[in-house]
Structure formats: C-alpha cells, structure tokens
Image 1 (cartoon, rainbow, N blue to C red):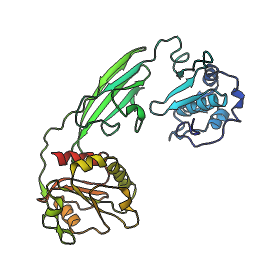
Image 2: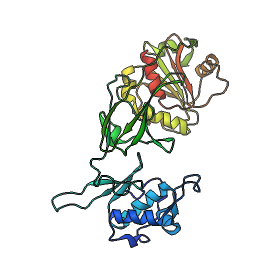
Image 3: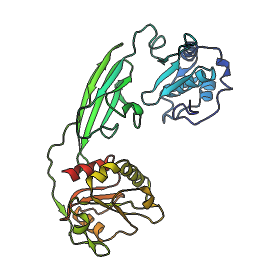
Length: 354
C-alpha cells in the first residue's frame, strides 16, 4: 500500500497507533465510533487531520476519521485502503484457509456492521456506451457520477481510474440515489448536457447507458483572416494549411494552463495524425518543444502577424494563453479559444471533421 492514504500529508503513525495491534477491523471500527467525535463544521477548509492528530484530539471531520481508521487498521496489520474515487473504505478479511485468499469488504460508519456481512451482495453499477462520437467517453470531459448526500450531490473522482478505461465498466457502490451526467461541448464553450437520477437498492445490480447528446447546429458568425499572411520563410497561410487546415497555438510563457494543453495534445497524437493538418506552435525558447514528439508541428519563438489578425477577427482585446485557433486554407477561423478549457483538442478535432 502507498504511504499516503488519501490527500493527507504523510506523517508517521504506526508507533503511535500500535495499541490497535491484535484488533480486528470491526473492533477498530467500533472503537472509532465510540471514541471519535465527528465534527464536520469546524474544519472549514477540509484540510485532512493526520492519523495521530485524530487519535490525540479524539475529534475529526468524517474524511479525517476515515483516513485514521485505515491507518489504525494498517498499524494493526489489517490491510485496508480508502477508494479515493468513491471515498469507500475497504478492509481485507482473514483468509479462510491457507489455500484461499481473503476478500476485500467495504466498511461504512453509517451501518451497524461491516458492509456485506449478513447483508447479501454489495450493490453494483455497470456503465455501458454505444455511441460513436466520441469513440470512448472520458470521465470529467464527457461524463460524471455523483451521489446525493444530505441534499447535496457529491461527485466521484474517477479521473484516470482504470475502472473507467473501457466499457462496460462495473463498480461497487453503496445503496442510495445517484446522478449520471453527460456533456457535449460546443466550440464556443457552451455545453449540451443530460442528467439522469436513479436509485440503487441494497443487493441490486443496476445498468445505465452513457448517453452523450449530439450537438445541434448553433450557427456563429464566420471569422476570417487573410489567407496570404506569411507564416515563415515565404510560406503563406493558404499553402501551409492545405486541404486539412492548420492549427495555431501560442503557449505564452508556458505556465500551468499551457502545460495542460500540451498533455492533452500529446495524448491525442494518433487522432491528430489521422486529421493530417499542420500545427504552428509558438512558445519560449527554453522549454524543449521539439522533444515532445508532436506530429506535423513547426515551432517558432516569436508570434507573428497571424496572431494579431486572429485577435482582430475574434475581437480579442486581451489574450489569455494558450491561444488556439483552427484555420482553413481560405483563412476561415473554424475554432478559437483563449485560456485553457478542458477538452480543447477534442473540440479542435470535432471542428476539423465538420
């Protein structure tokens, strides 16, 4: 198990919590319920309290309590972890025999005993997808899953989670009311969204389809620059763009927003290669752009006349970097964006296909 249980600062705890050795997960759970006072209002910024801090204070918010419980189990040599996507606690039950392995059981402080013990099968949710665009939906850019708790929706964090890498995807959940949200983003940043509420009962297996609504035509004013603008060494825009078009990117000083864009761009190099268009990228000279392995990409270290014309056409009085623009051979700006927005490269590819 990794040293960090959730999002807490890594601090030693095993010696301080050695008093739990010899106890089972259920015994530690009962001790926590009897000895730790839950206070979800005093820790306003939700900064996790260290396990030793919870043990000494005997007072904590729910999340710090959960981190402490996992730490206490590990100090007692009971394997445990906190699923940081759903905030569910899991403990490994003892092996029933030398030839059999133990099972991961969910533990909840809202039920009188270990989840799954004497309660049948833990409920599951299976997500399916049959759409073609995108080929595979990605958590956060295309869909999210949230649970209704005390009148608020708590969104799970399955970003880069292997369980959502392919579909159908099956996950274990607690009984309750959930919301499956999907979104499809227009080039101007607007989103066509869909929300579906459903309830999962104890022992129930639920299947839901991820439905991403297609974009409807929302015509925008055509923006255009001069197709004869020279990019470099006598190469003009119309020639550089060719039949596929060109992508202009200015990374500014390559701060955090631009770094996110490059990560997204590198992840979709296969799709960029299939598109076939050229990318003209501008950025500082000391960031090693040629080493990124980007296909069909030229690099420059000074912005030229093209950026000025893009800003004039789009009426951008102030530019937040990265600045991105997709332009065809006739100078039409098919897509433009300033500042990083999630799914920018996907929007560019969608506009290029259209």
